[in-house]
Length: 525
Image (cartoon, rainbow, N blue to C red; front, side, top):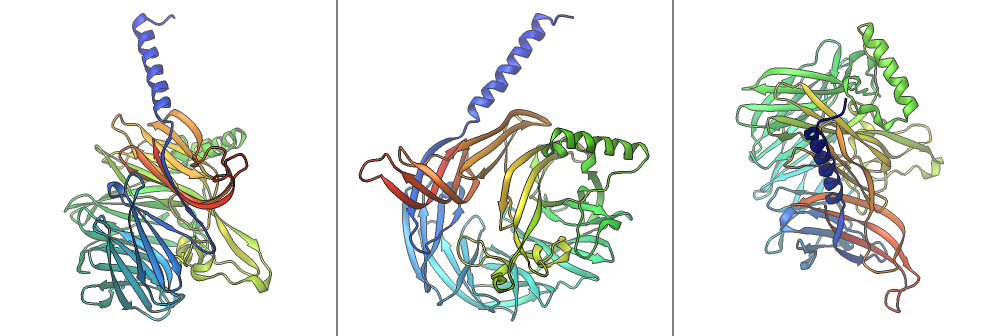
């Protein structure tokens, strides 16, 4: 049957809109800054939204440097400050008002914290002592309050420090059952620090989520219990109002868990009102329409047959995935859940080369970084390697995006396949930006290019694109991109940064030759 003129016109309009979105979704370089890399020079980047961006470096063993750039990547100021000799840069924390820099050294109880006032450009330095053999995994700040999570002799510890009084105390974290601190997140809207504990008893794990005020006082605590056959493997707490809280994370079948494996079956969402759980909904990845899109066509068909056969018999295919779950994104009356699927890789190394460095491995741009709990904490399903196996990074396979309604029901799902992305640090790679028309941009950077996908629900409006990040001179050829990152910056702009080796064989006397640079690129998207 031939379509009516009205339907034909409607179809043409929809096609035109999709084409328009494809055209406007192309990334364009607006501005680029390059800083030469000489010797052991390296930089850490801290995006500040409309306030600009900070670059942190250590020119020598006892000096740190902070540079502030505005949103046009013009340098506004540069500050050098003293730091105790041989302390390494560990991490930074931005609470929307100031940036705090953490410096320490391997298994030391001494920490120096530098507060950078990002507006006028001045710094304050604080020295604190924590605990012997404290292995720090999280560093978050709220005002002059510092929250540091980690392990002491394989026991989880949450340390609170008030910088204005230099008072440090260990916050009570006694929970029955072996437990681990999984996430520490700052809620700048409600001025809270949210901490999630995974509490293990046998093969079953529950999630205990706590919110702390700036004073270090406990604001609220909720506990999410799994169904009998399940185990809750991870959790992230989000406060929506004074009475409503959401906990999201991954779950798996209880009999699939062991001391070294945390096998994820799907995502769960739990809603708590006035400290009482209203519901906990479980969504197996076998119920998702697009979760297995990262497989080739033959593998997908085989998986679909297995799933269909199991469900016809009232069962489910048992899965064994590891996921890094993002913060929940409220959208109108729904919630957007985002998670990245990864697996650790190991390589063999001779016994004389087994030095792994602070945090269990090398590979940070500079300094030592936080300890990675995945490598030694079985609550994360990880291992530190044995015999002559050495950790060799995390490989990301794909990201999943799911829309959940107010009652916890799955509305739609979509996914993005990663192009052989690998990282020594387990951190969020994909950035998701929701648009006013209900569509979403999925963006990540890899090998000096921006990869993107535009979706609306379970439909793809604009498929996977790879857009090279432009350099600053005509004739440039990028020979190597050793590190690259991307973050949503403000409005329709992203910022990318990393290290590159560039050659220019055809330039003039000033541009010809080789150069190693740290770059900042402002991208309109």
